[in-house]
Length: 354
Image (tube, rainbow, N blue to C red):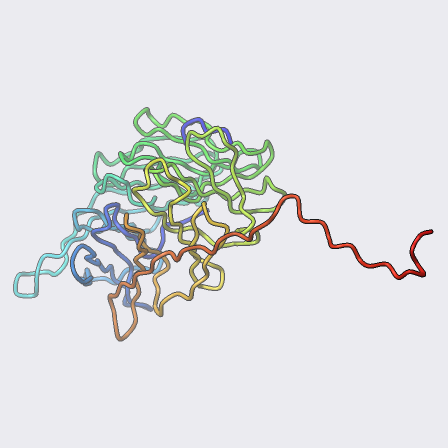
């Protein structure tokens, strides 16, 4: 793998702030959708609804910030509007939800797709991607001056942060029929550099990255079929495609942080096609497949101690967290090299050579 700096197509319906303190989702259904903020930093999680006078549309996106506010992205006619929502108290103190309008993006073309990027690692910044065949624009929509911060040739998707400062962003860029992950330096006006170059004609997408260890989770068809692989940011070693992940169409959604210089020991959580959860670490040759808890919201967060926290919501428990620990992998089979010779078969005397 050639790494010069370092497919999730949309922000998940349930988003967790960079520091794990808050989360947000669009709750309700039908014509009664409203943003909901979860507080995760404490002995037990609890949810605060953030409704406004008008229900939200089904295609609205929400993003939790580390200061407790919730960013919402709405489509209003031909504009994409962004605002911050926050609780203001009960009915006696006035409206329950405060709203701070931030600005809007007017693509000017129906072929432009606007979507929120994952939460910035600094906890306060938020960015959106406006992508079309003519090019892609990165917009800062919170935590700074509202406006464009980068312009990239080609249609981009995905979005993975490569550092803790919220400066280096990886995007999957489609050019001339091939998709390659590139690194975008937002601190240098959106300077673009190659990131994944596994094979000349392969589609190489970055799915997830851990800035602490440098672990990269990749999907590529370089082996002849789309497969999950892993590599290390800045390493000269090639991308590896473990046999235990062959045929696995799951999407990695969380990586264990805090494993500096030890990418092989990072726990990785996969969202499987059947709705279950896969737990794996690069050092192992085994994927643990588990059933998801009832009402699971499709994402989660690893602690530095190696526990995976999964949010769920059911009629009985509208705001719940369950935790898992990655089991110890079974030892690999013992093989003697070279294998022992087979014991000689006795030959009947009438068949023995003279």
